[in-house]
Image (cartoon, rainbow, N blue to C red):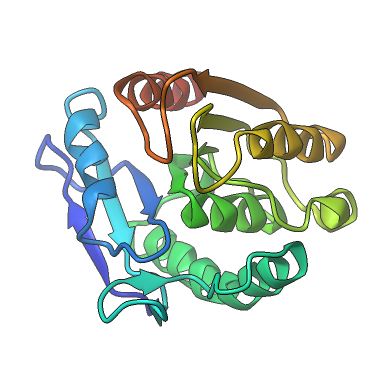
Length: 216
């Protein structure tokens, strides 16, 4: 089971919803991504926020974690990587749902970079749809096969900086096409002056998207 870090519901009760943050390459569950939960807690007081460590040590530095290696940055390698890491994430999602007695529609996935890749691969291939996916600065691996492999259609929001120096901005449009071709509802937000990070506008709009889904 993946080690995780948590922010309990602000209302002090047992969680009625959960958001799982999936960090990027070289980060960890204690990194900056869980700080978004601090910003969202007041608007979602019944929600628990969790950020698991990726399953493998970062292979390009002595600290940090990774979902898979990106020493070779190619489509085939990335697809093999997400496929190998998917069982770890699925096991963790199942654990969160079962241990909190939550149905999948009460759980959302929020990813950054490599974490977005994991969320976009795993969520549509789960039989029961999670509430939604918010993906920052990521891309869609395995998009060509998604139409035939898809088991559910959770709505997705993609946020990407036009100045991203790590994952090209064009990746957002490619992911949008792949998801829509598979029948998944997608909304997008481009950040004109943002690089490989999540800015205040993206964080705010991500929260708005999740709240809208949970109100519907």
